[in-house]
Image 1 (tube, rainbow, N blue to C red):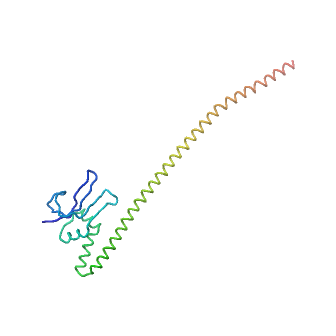
Image 2: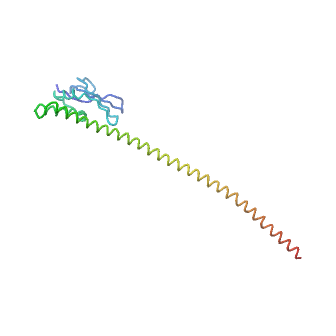
Image 3: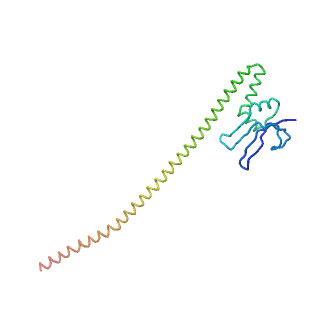
Length: 190
């Protein structure tokens, strides 16, 4: 019986969620399984993976073959690295304590890298939000300036419309007065 480490799909259409399982290769994809090793949620950013590394290493040592995606997940969580370190212990290259120390250092470095990505994503999200708010403030200020300019133009046009009528009236009175004086001077001369 060949045993595979593979994914079982759960979740609704467009929102996948996977269980990482050890199953007989002849079983259906979402059918019977021998042991559940963890879960994988590709929707979140970064993807959420919960994996029992020790059980995965035990199954790998017993000959279970991971599928391509399962191999990538096992590599990401360090199960393949831990198996590699156990091979070094078996050959006598170093002892079990050294292997655990190396694996712990690798896990810490990986967690720091993932945390850096999470912080980078949150920073990028806040920067994008800040930039959107600044752009919106510019647009609002442009609208306010345009409305103020339109109001000033309308007021100036209204003043211009009223001002010529007053000037025309003063010009008419100014032209009438000299003619009256001119008539008066003509009468006195006559």
